[in-house]
Length: 433
Image (cartoon, rainbow, N blue to C red; front, side):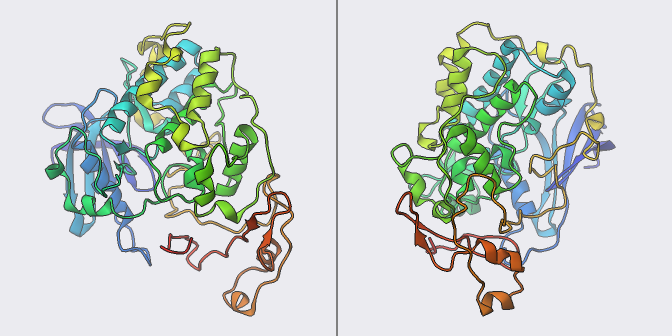
């Protein structure tokens, strides 16, 4: 990277540090992400930080679109665990822009959604799952206001029934042999920021698809329309996230989402029945509410696809779609390095990598208090001598049933939540569920 001169740090996240830099040859300002080496994680046969960099390079080397960030250069040394990625410099992210603007009118929300859905439709046509759509990963050009989807560290090609990535329009020979093998493995749930994570991922799905990006897109739309600029579902844990979702969207019904009963973690917790509630959004058209509803379907098979949403009534109804420049015309030319620091007083974590840069994998604690939705009728049990010997804290005993018992309301077996492993990290074990 001798051709670039560093000018300062922009941000620091889970997988690395992003710097502001300048090309010595052209004078062009760029963003450079350096993936930092981390200690090996027991029980993992792959370094997640190196894998993230490899995925980002693999995907961005093969996609080219107006609404996808450009990878200009990269330096990869997998054996040394060293990766440096060079991107075009984009001054704003959607979250920072909205903090400066305070609010967008409906026509401006439409242009944001049009650009986001256009970029997603392109990625999904190549069967690329982004798996971390959120406002801070949607970057914008300072002058034109053009939105670009960024941060592809969690992206991958969507597996097909044949165990190969869907590569519509791409040459399979361009793909790494390791990626082809990877498509035969179960998908991980340890991606996507919690506030934008779909219900099937929260229930432990290992064979989700492109619909996870559509759920996250619906959450972004809800954030843009919120009169208080708050996330629609701001859960403090994965269980609380499901509670937030069900309070607004209602609890799943078997007739509407029968596949939910097959998800690994679905039967572990019994939720009280909730009816869908109207969205508490700013004044907006019926077409806007309809799009939110179609994106935020609990059943992933019922979510509207990006290409279909683009030709729907939402973009043809009044008011007309604004010009992209209107998004940034009143916010000034802000250098990325001066975007809100993470230690500022108004910073609120969304459960993402940039909100908690030191964590490696989310620990999944046993919850001992009710969030108001999951069934409080589970009988209190006691821990066995074997469990006590593992050093589990005594409050854990209050949430275990002595044995699984049928639910009085549904007749289904209610399974107690298992204790966390010593590492604090749950991993999929084939054949368990």
